Image (cartoon, rainbow, N blue to C red):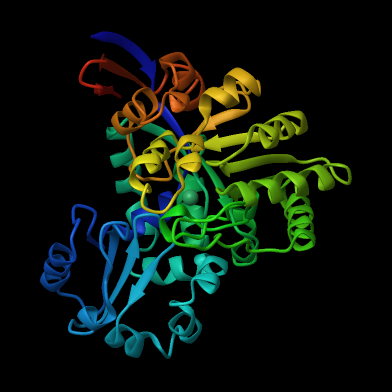
Length: 395
Ligand SMILES: [Zn+2]
């Protein structure tokens, strides 16, 4: 048993406003079968049942089953796959005609995530944010980056009361909806290059088992232009790239745009980054924002990813030992809220499926924790034999 005291977490990549608003939604995250999910959905009583946490790697949600229920809209754990039944389509057709028409088209979904998130969170609103922030603190997360603030009310709620604790990012389309106060509080602009492994839309240079290579959302030229216009708004750009093909496009685009304009660049997730891409990103001064909890994808997505991708997912040892990334400097960590909390973060960092994914406690603290103990600390007990971490949060 190893005992240590480390500062509270700064979860660099999550979605506070989205998860706060979605908290009222039915939770399917404990369900691993269609039967159990339908049982949860049947119990809900709302004019439109919104559900989160669908584990689409465990079971499908066939339309003919969902159509037996009242209006229901479901979002999967990775927030990139959705289901909407006939009754929900009818109810939402007037207000959200484009979403109803596009929700089954995965390529459309990946390009319009911000709009879909708005639909899923419309009932929650910004009022749920203080409760959510308190819940995060109780789990050892004191500071966090909200990567997709999609409403002016949410941006104001976060920037007002949580100054210094939250870092706000948004997408170019949402930027236009924010007022002057929210814009001034914004840290940077987030762009997407591909989807997610959970929806088989992360863009691979190779192929998924059973076919398909995922989705690249932009042409090379489009991405270059998006980066330059985002950089002009805030001077900071964060680029979501999970598959090796998306990472190739992101790194190449940054190499080209860096010659034209000076700005700070971050790559989000970078799960299937190759050594060559890592070396080039390091040379450019790009920060990688990665999620130790996604190391588990190497076990969870063996159904869809060839062995070399399972082995190459979240290659922290390669990044630190060979490419020279330094936790806390140009390698920072977050959870994407899947799940939140210090215990899950520590266990996934210290005891991942593959040795190449392992972080030391020192590296974890440098890349994932606040710089000091002012807001509180975590007393941790690490049990290497059971591969568990006990966490006491001291606020
Ligand atoms: Zn995210």
